Image (tube, rainbow, N blue to C red; front, side):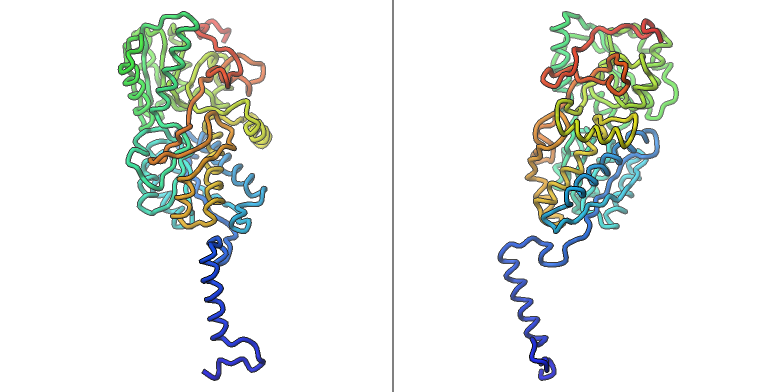
Length: 429
């Protein structure tokens, strides 16, 4: 129409629309990043869901701290450069160690604009979040949670950095074989105990199955389970004492680990040692300080930090300065890695589109992390094929923060392991 002409001789509205359409088509054909076809996002929202209240708040707080530290590090390096330097921002959620709360929190964070979720330490909440993430088509990166069933369904939006339970068992089998051979000891009787949450039951059952399937040279003389959040383990420890095991293999959380070791001391339970198939409770800074000499010589099979890695040394030194008395461990270390993996995928996806982000995650080959194991590469089910564990042991050291040492495998080892241990009541406690 005549009124569309620009009387000043400039471009008309109709010509502007034509020109804009042509430029847009050209941009699409030439494969420009998604954000160039619209406004570059100023910030990208990631939902962090951890157990910051409930029975294990110390772990949840540590993991959100390192989720945040990773975000700060990425933003300090210029953000997501392929999207115009867009900054990452964490939306924080607390699942309280409850599956139904985990699902509700994940739903809320997605509605608030989270393009990806990270968390959640506990396997039960991880299952709940994974189901929702699949329904909502939102990628979910598991920083910590081991239960095999989480990825067994083959969800397309779930990616686990942490080892699954099956990998824990392969590692502990190798470490036990090495200890028995090198120390020329005979382990004949063992007790397996586990906390009664999803992870504890899964990990305990998997270890029992592994011992039986591989015909390891000892008898399981008792299997003891107790509820998460238990306040007294005197009855359970009395059962352990009555069973007369050579070694106790516990799967714990932080609170019950302290209860157990103190009750073992009180009841003077004689053991060659404690070796966890893989669980928290035996390495966290607060537990190491609270238990002091009672924590000495406990072994734990966990996906630990690589103490010889320059990346670990850099991140850990800054973390210790930010939070005096704390250090990177299995939980906080993988909390840092989970966000790193998301940022790496966003950089390669050049978009926050869920399909593009999911495909980028599927092609992940991420090497620049502070943990034991090789590059993070996901298989068809979303599991990290290079995830592994190390055997750590609490050893005497004047500096409390240096007591947890990698002892196996030898390429990561910081000190030789001690086995059998000195009895709890022989340590001058």
